[in-house]
Length: 537
Image 1 (spheres, one colour):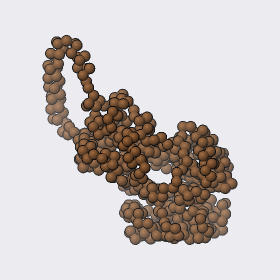
Image 2 (tube, rainbow, N blue to C red):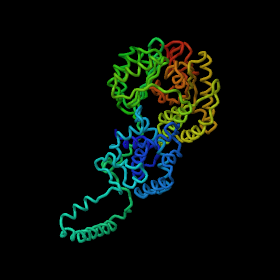
Image 3 (spheres, helix red, strand yellow):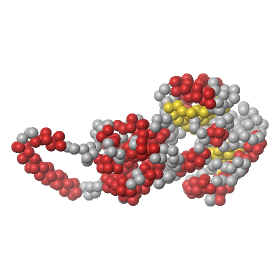
């Protein structure tokens, strides 16, 4: 497990945004190692283990290092080493700390974070500088020395001195002379370098990997999401909901093949978002043929595969416990866990932080599909029976509106969804009202009204089960999709990356409850409707 590489790939882009400075990237890389070593101390970690740490909680850094002198030293040393302003360095590490904390917790899975970090000490210890021994728990760096690790300033070199003395007074007498020769050579080289290359001495060195990759280094550090698969079964073990996010069509085909083998033609309802924002491999792909039948045999179950983790849920506690056990046996290399109780505020906060990070990473002239995907990440938690946008979402929508206004040909469809806890007609109307509310707010922030359209889906298009609190929460959502008449029906079924035509050849109100087959999205009155674009009906 290369912890530093993972944090560099996932956290650094969120912290730096469009700033691809090698100096700041290297500064963060070194901070991640120091930060990981600090969290490896159980006493430190236990101080906030039960806190709900927000991803934008920049005061969290102050709670990890409670001593002002330690925080000042970290900022000063990192700034000096990497030629970065000290205030800027302090800001970078304060932003990175909560994000890195969440990533490390995710990597640890069910393993306690301190144990996970101590087990993987070799993966980051060699990034820790010698001066950091004064801001880390005593004895940590010397506990398991790694090859190439920095030697602490407090480590005694006496044995080396005694061994040198045994070689005789002649060699001892030569040492000062040798030292003078070396110093003279260094001074000459430095003077020559200053004359031929005016680059400041303090300019941070580019790593061999960065030098070899050149411009591609930035791409390596991009925020690539793990491929994922989310499914839910119904009361009769049918495939109730299915979504996948994959990096290429090869992985999509492999996953679809396994779904078809387990669920037959029902697999065709699975929506796929195929985009290079997602990884092109899925660690559990080889075990899907075994995993999927296990989930299928549990009514009203749900499963989310993302990266190395499998999270499952079911309304029956005994069935859920067996499901976890069976899946762990089928995929021993994966971390299988039962979904915990719904942390409503935590889910909202995490979604807004993730949406913020995605919006920050869009760069100049973003693809409208990426804008739609970033907008769809946020959770807009409307009050029961209400369509009033919560204040916590307005700040994000304000920032999003500024970006949207600068993107040419930004045409979006805003789609409202509900859970199943009301009548079909009521849910359909409520979902429309909520989508209209989001549109109205964006228009109030300067977005051209003609660039936005809305659609209510009610409870007809679930992405999770409706038998658990967690599943119902995920089904209550607002999705943004690109309005592009040129995409085909299969692309239009992709979450956050879909397209809905609005020309006269289609149903003017795009109603999924009518009796024709002119909708791109499924008709609620007939599962066979809406699977293809047929404007003649």
